[in-house]
Length: 179
Length: 176
Image 1 (cartoon, chains in turn purple, orange):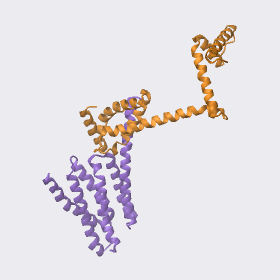
Image 2 (cartoon, each protein chain N blue to C red):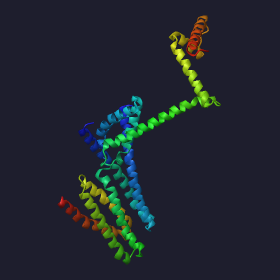
Image 3 (spheres, chains in turn red, yellow):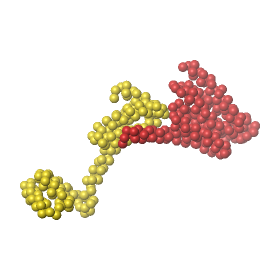
Image 4 (cartoon, rainbow over the protein chains, first blue to last red):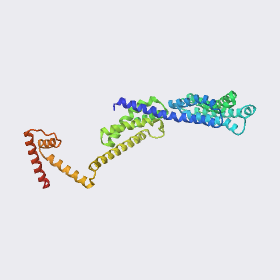
């Protein structure tokens, strides 16, 4: 085999290896979506979020570097934030209306805050590509969390975002100050 | 491989594991000669060594995303190459076993003893043939392949070669 041909084969093998990593991220995102449907979310609404979440997780994991490193934390943090409002509903709260506003909305805010703080602290620990990590992690966490928070409508999504910003920003600033 | 080259390879592999494609060329350039030398030494055959090194190199890159930066990159890559060399050796041994078993399977009812006797006779004939003059040996081989010429000259040459073959056989083994 010529050296150029060997180089091309090695390159293809490397890209296939990256694609395998991406397939695991895609599977993780799909499992979150399936869990949301299994916990009672409407498949139609989940499909809208999933068409953004699954390819984004795959592309970021395939690309690698800081954005790739943020995929797993983003999905885990977002998954946890997704489960909070769905857990409240499973415990007996109603899907819509005053009861949901009383329990689901705070659950979304708390979930968003937890996800934001977790991603911010991990991003601050990154040696290089901190902003890339933060952007990728927050995007994935927000999409994953909206699989659950969407049930509280746009108020749930807004609450989750505000929670993430309010909790994540001081954590990030504090971690920077300690460096 | 000196220490700085080893450290550069470690950095390159760590970068590749993280998805940094700019490390690819440097890692390829460092790994290829290393794996080729290793495989050639392990298999004692340059051609087989190069084939094994190529497979090992492709395998290293296909698993680069799984590389753990806490491990030594050189040892990790050589481990993959060693596995590839073991596979080649096993294949070779299996091929040799298959070739050794071929006469038994082709003769159908031949026993292992018959196969050993056949092999001994063939070796003895080859040894006697090797002791003849090259022209006589060539004449006998041409006749054995069924490519004999229909000239009287070739017939006489063949008779002379067969006579010398018998003489040499008797001298070595005492009977025809």
